[in-house]
Each structure stands twice: as structure tokens, then as C-alpha cells.
Length: 132
Image (cartoon, rainbow, N blue to C red; front, side, top):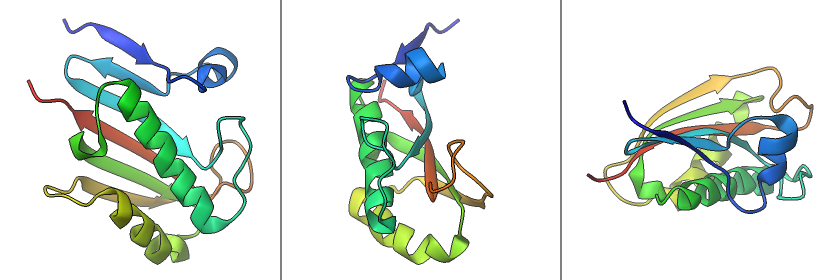
């Protein structure tokens, strides 16, 4: 059986301790990243739409780096959106972060509310696989 390890990057300890979930779990060479939203490390919502999407991707990068991975290791991306009309903007930002082939699989889902609070517009969940 693969050993499981909680991945908690510096600055995200409050997520693990107060909200009670791991930003990611590493099992073998697979990393399961919890949904990352547009809040900064002080747990504050980033207001502007594009800035919030950027922050969610920056949080994703931070979690992956803490697990020894990069965005190029992501094989599956699931995103949740409170307004599907934001998809063109989301895709513009996403394409700044995912620039090399192969691109990950991607599923976009509409959602009523994210992160337990009104105001969040996107949540990004990912699975990454490290080379053997």
C-alpha cells in the first residue's frame, strides 16, 4: 500500500489546522490537490475577477511545489465556476500557466457557491503525477 502524506505549504497551515483539510495529499507518485480558490495566504478573498483566477493558479503552483511537482506534472484539472461566462477569461489565464504539451485533461463545472462564501468565482482542483 502506498504511503499517504499531507502536503501543507508554508503559509497554508491555517487551512490544515482550522478548516481541517490538506491542501494536497501525496500517495506514491500521485498528488491530489484540493480545490484552490482566489484567496491570499492571509485567507483574504482577492476581489478583481482576473486577479482572483491568477491567485487560484498561484495557490495551485504553491501546493504543487511543496509536493515536489510543477504545473507540467498535472494530468487532470477540474475547475468550478460560479459564472460560466467567465470561461474565456479563465482560459486566457490558464493558458499563461499551462504552456507545454501535453496539456492536462480538463473539466469545467458550473457551481452555485464556492469555498463556503459568496464572492469566490473559481476553484481549481488538480491531479499531478511525478515521473518514476
